[in-house]
Amino acid sequence: MLQLRDILDYKTNEMTLTSNEQAVIIRTERGLTIAGTRITLYDVMDYITEEYPQKFICAMLSITDKQLIAALSYIDDHRAEVEAEYQNVLKEAEELRQYYEQENRDLIAKITRKPPEPGTEEILAKLRAERAKFESQT
Image (cartoon, rainbow, N blue to C red; front, side):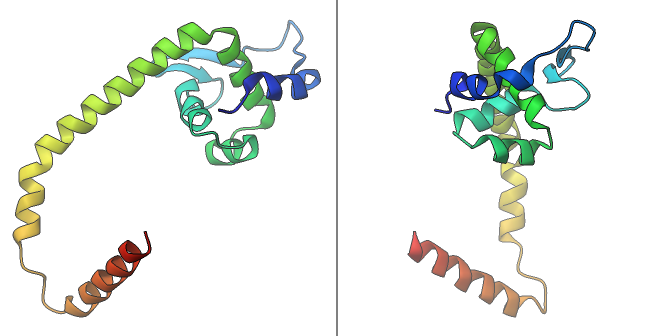
C-alpha cells in the first residue's frame, strides 16, 4: 500500500501552514472534503487503496500536490475516524449498486431480447469480433 508516512516525510517542508490559513479539510454534506473542491477523503482513499502514485491521484482528482498532502496528512492523523467513515461509504455504495442492479434487471433483460435495429448488423458484428479478440487475450 502507498505509505502515507513516506510521502508526508518527503513533503513535510511544503506542508507548513500558518495559523491564519484556512482549513484544507472540511466536513460537508458529502463527508470529509478537500476545501474548495467536491473531492472527499474517501475519493482519495479509493486511489490509495489501489496504490496509485501521487502524481496520478492529483491528475485524476484535479487537485494540487499540496491538497493531496494535506488530505494524506489528515488521513494519517485521524486514521480510525477516516477508516470507519470510509468503510461506511463503501458499504452504502455496495448497497446502492445491488439495489440498482435489482431494479434494472427486468429492463436489461427486456433490452437484451429486442432484435437489433435495421442497419446495425455490421457494427454489431465488429463489436462481437473485438470482444472475442479481447477475451481470447485475457
